[in-house]
Length: 187
Image (cartoon, rainbow, N blue to C red; front, side, top):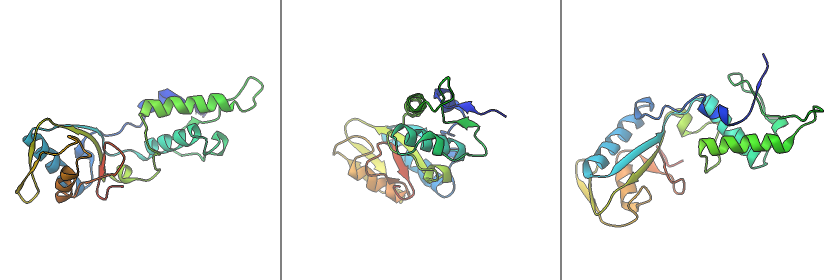
């Protein structure tokens, strides 16, 4: 079977579950309870990524590496579940590196990748969620033990240090620099 050239069309394949129901236990229960507590308190929480299929992780990892020029497309190993051809060729059959990198860039942009994706990560394990959190004014949010923490400090998003402490009571830890990423251990 002939492989299909890389490019933006691959972004829609092997979709992310985008639902907390796909997460692994016990992270799933903690994550759902944390999100419910924030919403009850008045925060807006939008989940954008949860469990990522291994095939999607492969595509994301290597399009990023090709785009960032840390690997040449002809050096990417095959994945048995993904019939992608990373190497674009010129009419004379020589490697067209600019076209290969442009296709990888289109994929990076299509996925909305901001940080180098790992082949195996908390997302592929079901132990991570990407979510955008925001609120206005103060936020009185319940901790896992039922006590309430009132957050009056800024920023009013996932980078708020007090909100991060509340998240930890649910077993949900904020990544220090990846804006939407929360997981079992912050990685």
